[in-house]
Amino acid sequence: MAHPKSRISKQRKRKRRTHKKAAMPNVSICPTTGESHLFHRAYSDAEGNLFYRGKLLVKALEEE
Image 1 (cartoon, rainbow, N blue to C red):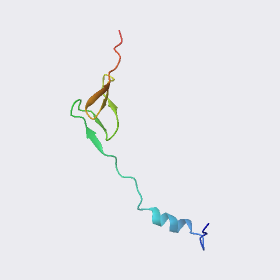
Image 2: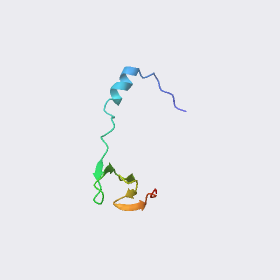
Image 3: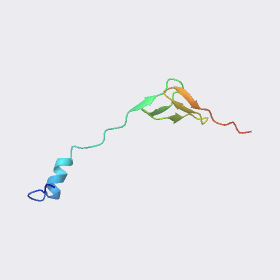
Image 4: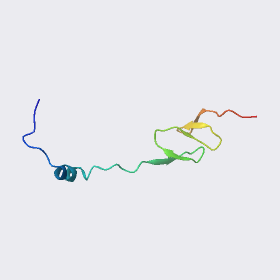
């Protein structure tokens, strides 16, 4: 295995990593329900139905 010739200091390592930041997540609005949600994620409406890409996946059970 390769070994570094000298140790990289904490300050040098942190200076290099300052530009690696998480971007803001993309939020979409469902054309069917109007709910805001993250891309590529299933989301539920106020009634508990589960949607994905505007299509109903799982219908919530109706309580009596």
